[in-house]
Image 1 (cartoon, rainbow, N blue to C red):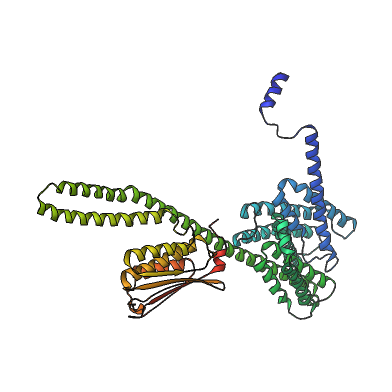
Image 2: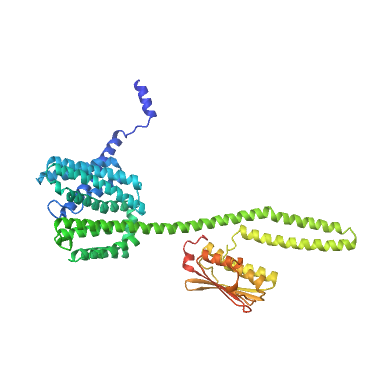
Length: 539
């Protein structure tokens, strides 16, 4: 292939790496990222070593969580940062002449590298990328991944130390347990803290920088110090503050609260104070590790459960809104079909009736008179049905409460009064109550059903509708002077009453019906105004 052909082939294929200055800049950024990760890894190790219980025992090992979180968020390609950090840590151990053979240090570094890489891969596999840890399955998947990864490090490290002659076979179970619990506790503290804060650090900080957030941190610090400092078994005192964080602030601040409690517990014990310090060294480490593990798991799972419940509530509200929109679309569809079919058929019947009446005018007078009266009656009934059909089409095809349900009830009452002679008075506030369209529609439906019952069944001469705002509630009251009825003996399934109860339940309103035979009926509906102000759908 000639140089020209080679250039043409390369121009057709996207070159996988940047060239020239761009490539050097990318390499510089990658190197800076590797160095930054190595420094963060070493800093986490230094923090753990600064709070050691003996010259060689740290209660937890947070670099495991730092490394797994970094590779989980940024990608496995940043593994050289972990490798460099491990080299620095092991180089310092070798220089300090602590008696660890070079082979044991190499095995320990290999186990830690496997821990971080396998842990990052497992977490990505089990909970996906950029998880918020706000689901119990995510917290469970994280726990499984971190537990498996730290077990790899503990196993390889223990074998390396045993092979170097640092420990005996009888010490292997205790050594492995301490290593595994230390790495697991460190990972459960560091990993959720980094992952949750990396999602939305500014929003999380704004949530924390409130009076309640400051009060929460103060409570965590005070209760953690008190629970560990006192030489009594009261370590559970910090849990109310951790539960507060889980319920009110979400996974990110809950993870921060757990980290604060863990650091204070380790720091106080490392300075030879508190209930844990009274134990033997092995029990001291074990007690601290179990305390941190239980606190972290409790807080993380509780915050995930709370987040799931909140999400379920939000999904339920969204589902109700969608169902309301679908019902509205269905109403419009029915209105179109009625207009195109039944309404047109009724109009045609009126035309044919008028044609028959005109034809009968030329027939025998007696016969024409009798048939004419019948046809006239048919025409009147048809026109009445057409009027009702048009009203129904208008109601289904448009928003009856477009200018408020009080105005809609007023119009409906005027129509009923004109048709049936019942005096109906509607009194309401001068302004439109702060309610959503859904709430107004259901209130109008209840009022319309109640007035229809007054006209058709109550044999009343008057009725009144009063709409009042009483504190944080809106009260709608419909009463009449009709024959009344006994609600206790009303057959179950009565369409009108069931319809009103269903509408009231839909908007979380309180519906009460007071009536007695011969004493009229009072129907009262009470609905919160606060709920109506939230999510107003009229805009």
